[in-house]
Amino acid sequence: MQQIPTLSLFSSVQSNLPLVEADRDPAVFGSSVGSPAGSAKLASATLETLFQGLISQTTTTLLIETLDAQRIELETTCIEPYGSDGLLWRGISPLFPGVEAHLSIVSDARRPEHWQVSGRLFLADGTRMLIQPGGEGYAYLSIMTNPRREMFANVRPIVQLDGGHPAAHRQSSVASSDIDAMTAIIRIMPAYPPSTLKVLGNDMAALKATIGDWQNLTNRIMQNSGINARIEMYDTLLELPEPKTNKVSELLAETLAARPGFPPYDNRGKGSLWDIVRQHRDSSQSDIVLLLAADWTDNSVIGEAGSIPLPPRVDKADDLEQCTLCFCPQKAGSLEIGQVFAHELGHLLGGSHDLETLMQTGMHYDDLPMFDYVCGYQAEDRSFMTIMGYPREEEVWIPYYSDSDQTWLNPKTGKREPVGIPVGKPNAADAAAFFRESTQTVAQYRNRDRAQADSYALSMDVEPPLGGTVLPSTWGPYPQGSVQTVRALPRAGYTFDQWELDGHPAGSTQPLSFHMYSDHRVVAHFTESATRPRLSIAVVADGLQDKVAMSVNVIDRDPKNNISGPSYPFGTEIHIDCNAGASILEKYTFSGWQINGNPSLIKGYEGHHYLGSTDVYDYFFRLVVRMEQDIKAEAVFEKK
Image (cartoon, rainbow, N blue to C red):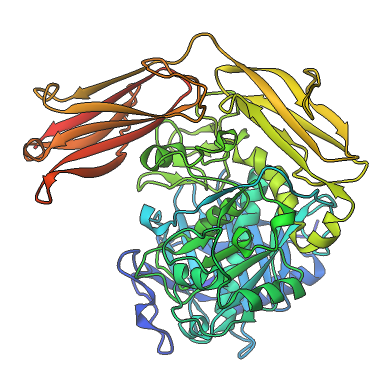
């Protein structure tokens, strides 16, 4: 039996000694995200052997040394070519569950003996060591920290339920254990202004290694989540004209012509870069555009999606707003940008944030509650968060989209725990169920003209609006004569009643099937439970119960409702405000909101009201809840 060789990725590791490069901007690493914890000399012979193994399909065991001198052996699980001068590698430990590594490796065309490597090593305790491009044959090493909430952009949902196109399955030409004949391939076209490459020392290998790492990690997340799709970066990067301001939100705005720092709007004109980006997206046969900005430090946003299309539609793919991302490839110390990339890509697939974040900012789905399950999942004990969530400092940000069918080995408990909640249960979070279909649609953006030929539209609705959702086999319009199916999924507190097809009763069979010889409209009718969930509110602090005011504001998404409380229709969004005068907050601190006795408090949203004068105001602390079960919300204060 042939012995599998073991090769070391690093020839040496130096802790607490960041590598300083003369040809790079010293401000690349910001103090807000932490500096590298060390550097490592890359073993060029190992990297060359990996390339030869890619050609000969030879299996290799890779040894990675950590900053604390652990030596982790990993068996190859996936190796594939990346462009003309790189490869993507993944491996797992045969001894320790949950330990794995992802690497993007690119040869430097200027100096073939030098390599650039970007990736990460997942450790058994839930932490991970980031590996980022250095120079002169080195890599930076750091222990990951979660991004702060303000590093994420606010992205606007676009409701578009009456169209879309079917996805034809294709076989990829890439040899990889991840790909089969039914995998949807989403091709991404990277584009950069000259100043972006300049901050990386004009090192194209470093840039390619970085975005290759984003591809590698995102495909692993797709695989973890049971989504038969993958992304592929187009090999030739487009050089753009230099924009007025090369920062994340501004570069996206200059392409989409949106106001900087705000979501795009329907009445906007085209941006100055729109035509060149659109032209090259079409010529490269790509589905999504990835703009690469030079800086993100001023406005803190490190990545941003153009919109959240609900759902993604092929007939809208001419609009760059629903198929453009903008990111900064500049190294960010201990910040995990790869997962931020997968997060923002999830927005383009139709996903939103975790429930706790929505409790702070509002549900965002006032016009279309049927998609509120396409969101991130947060463990009840706040120990971990899936990709579409905003991770808190103490939470493990796991490489999964929320998925009611999958589990994750939690290192804090030693148990496999669910990473999602199915539709029909309170606080449903099952983005993967939606992404399995939306990825198929996005993978057809580049074939949109052909996909729209001889096809029809299918519009879907639910009654009442809070009753549940409809999940089709794919998002239309659909080829003439094709057989399509739709499933009705009731929200917690509702049951499915019957179908309506083109204004006529169509029974209650699940799923409903029909032929597409014309446009169709399908409505799923649901019935609400006779017993509605109740809301109770209170203040937790000695001596404060009578000194702060509590108020409830109902965000009624169904105009037929006559809501007075304390019982509310299932799915109703409620804004709870706790108002406290400035004199109270001189003696007390607001700790957060406690929901149904959960000891993990939620901060919510804080603001203030002016009381007839710009110098006199009181404070309010707001919590947003969705009524899918009885809720007891308590505002918790502590004496200073």
